[in-house]
Length: 338
Ligand SMILES: NC(=O)c1ccc[n+]([C@@H]2O[C@H](COP(=O)([O-])OP(=O)(O)OC[C@H]3O[C@@H](n4cnc5c(N)ncnc54)[C@H](OP(=O)(O)O)[C@@H]3O)[C@@H](O)[C@H]2O)c1
Image (tube, rainbow, N blue to C red; front, top):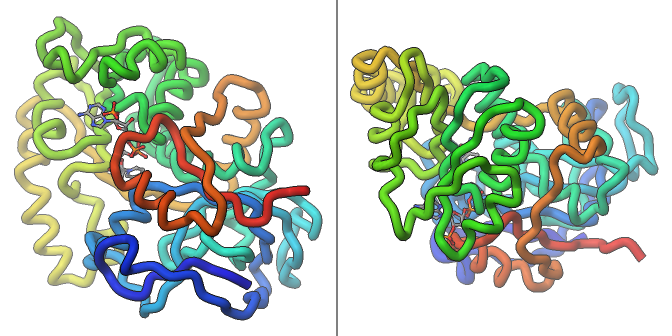
């Protein structure tokens, strides 16, 4: 089978190559998926560029890609509830990436049946951004209907899912930021207020939030606390670590001590504002993904796809994603259905 693999850390064109490798065999707990489509996430680019070497260090050449949708071809002896022929979607775990390939063997506990209302290409765009949204807004922020949330970058792969989920599933009042190029389009996703970040400083609005979902990092993370209502919370996927981060990446004691040191300023800032601060990495979870599938089937959230590339165009697809201006998700089709 063909798979895209990382041969060295650096710029995309010189770091990845298409390789011919044997189709993986399944362990007892795994399913073998014939991948129809896979979507790209910024973490793929960060991994290729070598920016994640402190937390992900697979031996090179390494399989890459997290999100996939495809058909189960084989299932290990211990797998229950999934059988060959099922169309499934998955966000592969950090320790076992490899969705940019014609076949992916992955533990069945990370896999769920794909929404019946979606094509494989649409379903492949969902897992990572959906799990991130659920783990941020429900598991950490504990969002409740009627609360006001600021979601940064509503036009991105993550933001375009999170805006819809926050509004239509959780019943939140949603403010988001987007460029003037994208603002009307993002409003149609369900945002109550869109602040055009290229025309206006989002901090100047007289708005206060129960939750800030920080997808930008840098100064945005620090600035978020001043915008919170009392008892509010900043949940970040781009800012500095929180207390739990070292535990999440299984850091050894030395790294854990260093990470706690790095976490201190933001945790102090949170305490000064009487707020909570979370910074987390998304975890793969088949049960949560099954819940997401039901939401998509209900029509409350729809997939937002910026562009679709063929498998042969993978490098161009990754380079496009790396430019950082996608409106929704970028998808690669491997074995498109006939
Ligand atoms: N748990 C995790 O650790 C986790 C999980 C998922 C995502 N993430 C991180 O979250 C970030 C966002 O992910 P993504 O998938 O949404 O990325 P993305 O799709 O590449 O985001 C691109 C979008 O961001 C918009 N944007 C850029 N700068 C902006 C600004 N200053 N204000 C508002 N919008 C801005 C762009 O709009 P314009 O073209 O109009 O500028 C574009 O539509 C990435 O850094 C990713 O690594 C982390």
